[in-house]
Structures are given as C-alpha cells and as structure tokens.
Length: 320
Image (cartoon, rainbow, N blue to C red; front, side, top):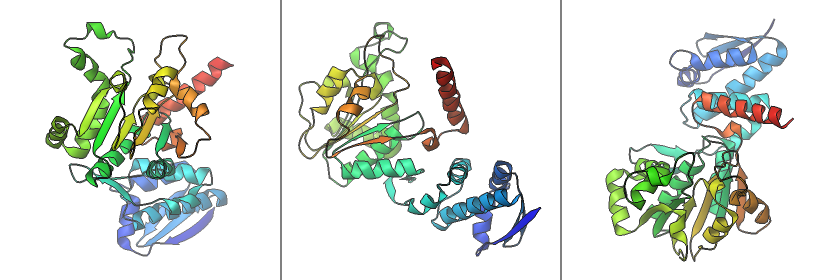
C-alpha cells in the first residue's frame, strides 16, 4: 500500500475541497480506487502508486479552481477527474475566471469547461462562429450571454435570435392560435435564456422597443442585419438553402453565432442539413471559426452525459 501526504495551506480550501458531506472526496476515492484521510490541513492518500498519483493530480486541479474562487460541485469535480484520466489536467491553469455576463438574479456566467472557454474566445474574436456539439454543452446559453453582454456595452443595437420551425413529430397546423403562437413553442428555449439574463420585464421592454427579436428563420429572408448580434439555434434543422440565406443576412458591425447538434437532425428524409454542409464549406474562411464540443463539455445532469454516450455506442453498433 502506497501513501502520500498532501498539505493544504488554508483550512477553508480543505472545506471547499471536501464539500458539505465529503461528496467530492468520495468521488475521487471511487474514481481512482484510493482511500483519503483528513488530519487537519493534511490529506493522506493511500492506494496503488499510479492511482495515488492520479488522485493527487485531481486534488491539485480542484484546489486550483478553489484558489480562483470557483465553487466545487459534482459537475466540475467530474470534469476535473476526466481531464486527469486523459492527461489533460495541466490545461486547467488556462481556465479563465472571466465573467461573460451577469444574469438578472446576479449570477455570473463563466466557462465551465475548456471547450466552453474556446467557444467564448472564438465568438469574441470572430464575426461568424459555428458551435456544434451535443445537448447540454451550453452552446445557446453562452451565445445568448455574450449577446446580452455586447448589447449592454452598446457594441450592438439589437439581439436577434432565430430557429427553424421544423416539425419534429408534430404538425404546426394542429397547434392552436395564429402563426406567432404556433411557432412560439419552437422558440421557447431562446426566450428562457433571455429571461434568465435580462429578467421578464426587461426582456418585454426591449422587445417592444425592437431591440430584441425572437423569430422563426423564415422571417429573416430579404433583410440586412446591421449592428446586431444574431444567433441561429438548432441549425442542424436548416436546409442548405436556408443556411446560405441566413448567413448572407450579415450586415456591418454584426456578429453571427450558429449552434446545432448534427446527431439530432429532424429534417424529412432525403434533405441534407445545412449545418453539415456549411461546416465543410466555411472551414478555411478567415474571420469564421468552427468550435466542436464533445461529451466532456456537457454541463447538465450527469445522466445527460450517460445518455449521450449510450446513444453514441448504439449508433456505432448499428453502423457495424
């Protein structure tokens, strides 16, 4: 049995590291098959030499987050453990504590993974960014946060959010109400993100002034969008023609963020996704960046990650 002592310089760091009911330490013990004992500001890690070394790297990584003022939770603890497993924990030092936006409830919005950090930097440094990856990676939420930040700092005059109103198993004609009421369910995730950032009252006020627009993709045709931060969500459900139409709406002093998940295409059989095509067409164009998220960037409940992995495994098996 190998043993290593880790000294923690401040007792409050040790408290944060352990969590309310030692849940963070329990995760480390299970992940690396080690035993961790606490004696004041000292941690004694016992196990096989290789496992003890991995556990120490995990503890060092978590303490670096605590030192930056980050609160530890199951999501970021598991993320650090996954980085240690793949030998990428040295990249944790590059994780920025930079706040993207403050929500209506005063909560700071920050990058939670290296993929999210890269995505935020790409949006800040490019005119057009494609964010592609599985559900729960924060593609839309972070894009809305950056849009609100740009709007508040008067970098843009408008925020425009749009989605293709593709029928995923339902028919629009059977939904009650006029056209706007029929398409509102498709736009609900965009409303939710804006409510979170601005609060319902501010959102409604800005919408009435025309500063914020949430509309189906079809409403973009024939327009030139200047001084705007434009987000196309669920872009995997656009056709090639719709994608070209949308991207050519770009006006002066505007940004475009396109988000989507190419594993969840709801287009009718035979129709090719505009997002799949545009990733190939624009991959070498200046001032355009393509960010690909992986399951490691999922920041929702752990089961979301497990579900994504299960589907990927099933698809590989089916293709064989």
